Amino acid sequence: MFGYLVANTELLDEEQQQRYKACYCGLCRSLKERHGQLSRLTLNFDMTFLVLLLGSLYEPEEQRETGKCIAHLVEARPWWRTAFTDYAADMNVALAYLKCTDDWEDDSNPIARAEAAMLKSAYQQISAQYPRQCEAMDLSIRDLRQLEKAGDESPDRAADCFAMLMGEIFAPREDYWSTTLRRTGQSLGRFIYVMDACMDLDSDTLFNRYNPFRRYYGLDNEQRFREILKMLLGDCVREFDRLPLVQDVDILKNILCVGLWTEFNQKFSKKKGPSDGTGSV
Image (tube, rainbow, N blue to C red; front, side, top):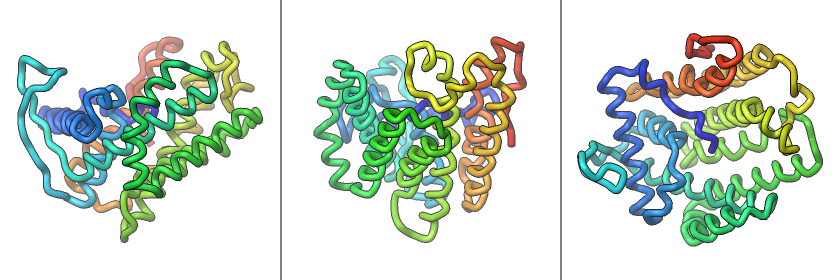
């Protein structure tokens, strides 16, 4: 994904910080064990949110250990994981593979081609196990590519493509909660896509890349973009609040209501001075 689903750890207590980091470490270990050492290069905090969300909802058994790894050779770190950690690792690799193939087709990027080749075998296994999710990812990316080629400036149409992708990832199984999980993922996907377009507007315009907000280039956009994003995030929070979450709910709310705004606030604080660090809805 885009790397926006991070916690503001300054607002978490020590226990919450340790649990959040241990979840991330567990995801890193799942990537290595399931898809090899190089798959760890695809890791970011986005899928940590999904592990926490699904774990809080379904309350699966947790495997907890402490150990060293290639990133922490001196000091052992605690980690934990569940069956949903493995699921998130698979989704992480599938997304990375499809993004690399898209970058190769769009820009003939040789690095992207090499990375796609490295991940191809893992993707084929994941696609066989999770055809619904992988078909949705592939279709969403292809639809986005068509909008980009057509120069379609509708943010809604572009964001809806990413919403479909995220909705299927957030619903690992078809059960009582799948509809709410899918809607949560869809609304979060719209927010993330629009956030990324807002953040990349200057560079996309400079390098003549597709961005549905190109018409706003050069304007004072902070308030315009913030209001759009708050509306989209409000949709996500409404769906999120329908889930009966207890464990880790404070970490999840931190990510949704504070952490998601980190890069946006940093970008615009350079122009307008310090921000309060939040974008609460």
